Length: 351
Image (cartoon, rainbow, N blue to C red; front, side, top):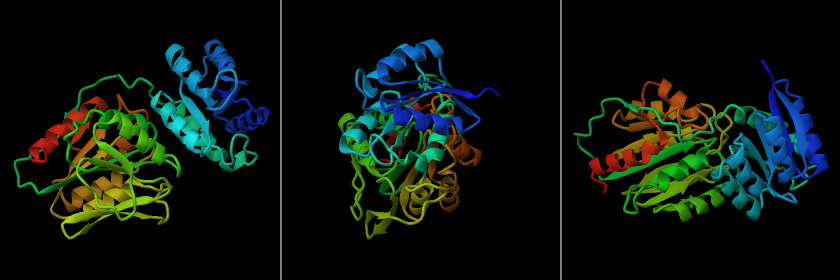
């Protein structure tokens, strides 16, 4: 098998050398060129046609944001960003992910990270994964569904839960911005993302969506018409207190490497009684969420489950694992999911 061909774009000679060495240490990856800024990088992308690109955000001549827009316009290729955990860095990272970047890597200690080798496995893994993603989110295919009967007694409250990872910010945007302002079911979201970035993600989605979107706060009571995103590095669970449902954030151990974990949220939702439940799994690497779906269906077979299909998934890992449980009711393109949620909530007498 031919190695994945990568280009590293960074204005720091030190960072170019370190990232190249880290990637070249993996026999599956070969760095074919490096560039000092976006303008130089775009020329090399057009000439060499790499399989994947790593791109720094802050660079002279042409920064990463402008370079990304040009790459996606003239020569689409999977891009992995290198970002810093600053307010400006997290905002720009979320904007870049929405504009076409596949994933991002957080530099451990700012622009020039002398300790970059502490995350070398993450760098190799994300670049390898990015090289195999589906960049064409406009591909369509037929949806499939099991026979789901809603001619049953519905409860007074309904909760929608969504789990996602790689490609999630763009997928969440497409779902949330297509829900009506009067959509009154609460939505709980786990997006695999490190601390410091989920707040910027929530703020961006809140600006783009008709419904209210926020980063979840420990102890708050969930309200209709609001989407809550689990903070990075915290598990999110819910507990029923009388007639209300509250969010609790924990620092319990990561589950299969994830904190927040979709399975942890789904597990807590499964414990709720007399609640209509809709569980959604969108694009993402791995299998987080599949065990939670099995538990949701095991404790309450009336839970409605939805998975994004392969045609529109950036990475068809998490949805595929969910489908393989045999417990997914709807398997469909991303663009159909908002309308399905609207339809289901209307039948459950929420709207």
